[in-house]
Every structure is written in structure tokens, then in C-alpha cells.
Length: 475
Ligand code: NBP
Figure: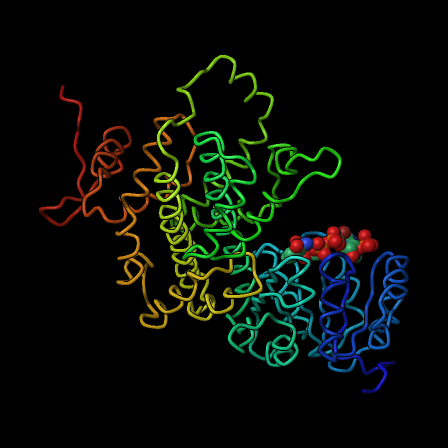
């Protein structure tokens, strides 16, 4: 292979942070000559000194030098912090680029920003792609799940390269052209929303088994390891088991027990809930997961409240085996319900934003490389293969049957947790969503009557067409 030099690097990458560094190595492993640039040149220097594969990597210490290394029309992948840093990099690059050059935003950008940037760059005759990337550091290095959106022309330009660096599942790359405009970043946002929901469900199983059943870290590791060999097989269950095995070197205690119980966030789960509310597509498990991270931040208040608001003893004194089985089965049902909420949102967003999304392709891309990869995605993919227009996963005959078979486990977990005073809001939200979704009649008629009572908002009737208003207060 030719040593890359001026004008013959296939891809340029801006931003040598965690993701950028690892993606460069992934790209060069696959034989693509890459030019790199980082705002702080010291970081570029360190990177070039450390990496043995440097022959395939060319550094640019100014943006001009960097752009000059690229084959025309150029393709530049930007991996910098989302928000204003992304705008700053695009603005600096613009005067150096020419017609049909392609800019790819690989960060966790908000989809509204991506739409704005798509329009701006189209006006200037450039191509733009919003590329959702999942899999963290390891995924970037060895094969992430990639969620590209933008024009088909933009995708065609880098399809070979993206397919080469993506995670592979059954010999097929975990990347597919998903749709136009901000579609890729929207799908990544919902991926992260689902991730929040699944993590919250796992956190609740941990709390239930620790405080409710008295399991220790080694016990918990064994439970999650066992679960990972069942229908729950997934990346998040696998790493949860590993976390409970890890001891703190200094104290010999389980490391997880030494970590402060305040969960941070970067916003993608919250964005999912915001947009779900905007589009009126309910995602209660995701909403509650965001809220519980927020509530975890109220550590001082929680400690005060613990002194003055006693509940029932958390400890359950029955045999733990049956409860752990309920938890396992309930977790599977709640996980499917969480995927169902996220995918129903994607279906709604596809219509609202004209993405023309293929949900089977989305699920296919999520089967490996990403944080929410799980064995159940095979069945979910099968559901969309059979019925591409499926309005909700719960209506898939196979998955619906699996949830029905576990509804009593969900009820057992929710009621036992309520009885023991243990918070399991994600399980409860999953169960309530299931019960509401399968209710042909909901009490929304009362809500309508109240709205009409105090605000003359009118209502419709079940027995005749039209719009009605009643003077509810009898004189
Ligand atoms: P890091 O925090 O590791 O690196 C940030 C990069 O942004 C550095 O190269 C930094 O350059 C550069 N940068 C900043 Br900050 N402001 C800049 C500016 N105004 N102009 C030019 N460069 C600027 O981030 P990361 O974890 O690699 O994440 C990159 C993107 O990928 C983010 O959008 C993130 O949300 C997304 N993402 C991350 C993960 C993950 O697991 N980490 C997973 C999926 C997606 P400097 O060296 O000069 O400060």
C-alpha cells in the first residue's frame, strides 16, 4: 500500500479524543490511509509517537496542512464534543473545502443541530452526514454500530469504509443507510434513550436483590452471569456481572459499593424524552430512567429524608430463589417493553420528520457493536421483517406472547417491591404501559370532562359524532 501523503488520504479525522483516536486505529487497521488533526497539537504529537501503525496515518498540525493531505472530493469525520465545538470546527473548515466535499459529524449531536448544519452545508454545495456511533472506546477501536443519516450520495461516498470499520454480525456489517437529514443522529439519540431505560431496569434489579434479598456482590455477579446465559443475553447484563466481580485494589471491597450513588448524564436520554413528549409518543420507561438519574443527584436530601420518612423494612424474608426467577422473567418483559417504546417513537419520528426509516435496518445495526446489543434484538428484527409497518412491538404475535407469559412476573416484582418499600419505577412504568396499551377503554373520558368543565375545551362522544360542550355547573 502507498504511504499516504499530500492529497491521497482517503479520510480525514478531526478530534483525537477517546473516540477519534480509536476510530483512526480502526480505519488504518482496515487499510485506509487517514489524515488526523486535533485542536491541541500536543495531542496529535503524542498520538503519532505512541501508535506503531503511524505509517498509515498522516498528521496535519494546521487545518490547511490537514486538508491538503486529503484525496478529492474530501471526506472529513469530525469527532469533537457536541454543540458549539462542532460548529466551531465546521466554521474553520468551510473556507478550506470545495464543492462535493463531505463533512461527517460523528458526535452525539442533537438532531435539530444536525438539520441546521445539513441545510447550511447544502447551501454551500457541500455534503453532510450525521453519523451516530455507539460502542464506546472498545467499539470505536474494534467495530462500532454505525447509524448514518444524510443524502444517499453522501453515504455512497463512504459506504465501503463504514462497512469495513463497523461491528460485524453473522458476516454482515452493523451499518446501513438509515435515511435523510438528521435521521442518523435521531436514531442514535433513541438508542441512548433505550440504553437509559435498560440501565435503570438493571439498577432496580440490583437494588431489589441487594436491599430486598440481602445478596452480596459475589452473589450478584453469579446471578447476572447466569442471566447472561439466558434470553437476557446482552452487553449490559454481561458488563453488570463483571462490575460485581471487580474489587477495589486499595480496600479489597467490591468497587461498585465504593462508587457514589449519583448518576451523571450527558443529555441524550433527556432529549429522547423531550422529543417523545413533543411527538406525543409515550416512552415512560425512558422518562423514569432520566428522572431517577436526576433524583439520585439529591443525595443530601435523600439522606435527610431517610431520617424522617421511614418505610417498611426493605428485607424480604421468603426464599430468594423464586423472587430471582420473577426478576429475571420480569426484566426480559420490561426490556422488550423499553425497546417497544423507543421503536414506536422512531416510527412516529419517521413520519413527522420524513426520515422514511426502515426499522428492521435500525434493529439490524443495533445487533452488535452498540451498548444496547442483546439477543432479543434477533426476535425484534424478525418482528419488523415480517411486518415492516408494525405500530408497536407488543402487537408482534411472538413477542406479545412472550410478554403475556411474563406479565405475572412483572406484577410480582412491582407488588413485592411496593410492599417492601423498594423503588422500581422503571418496572412499574413498563407494567403500567403494558396494561394501558392493552386497555380498550381508559379513564381519559373523565380527563376530557374535567377539561371541558374548567376550560370549555369540548369533548367528543362515543354514541354520536360531533364536538360538544356542557355547562357543568348547575345554576
Ligand atoms: P473527548 O472529550 O475524548 O475529546 C474531545 C475532542 O474535542 C478533543 O479532541 C478536543 O480537542 C476537541 N475539541 C473540543 Br472539546 N472543543 C473543540 C473546538 N472548539 N475545536 C476543535 N476541537 C475541539 O470526546 P470523545 O469521548 O472522543 O467524544 C467525541 C464525540 O463522540 C462526542 O460528541 C461524544 O458525545 C461522542 N461519543 C462518545 C462516546 C464515548 O464513549 N466516549 C460514544 C459515542 C459517541 P483538544 O484536544 O484540543 O481539547
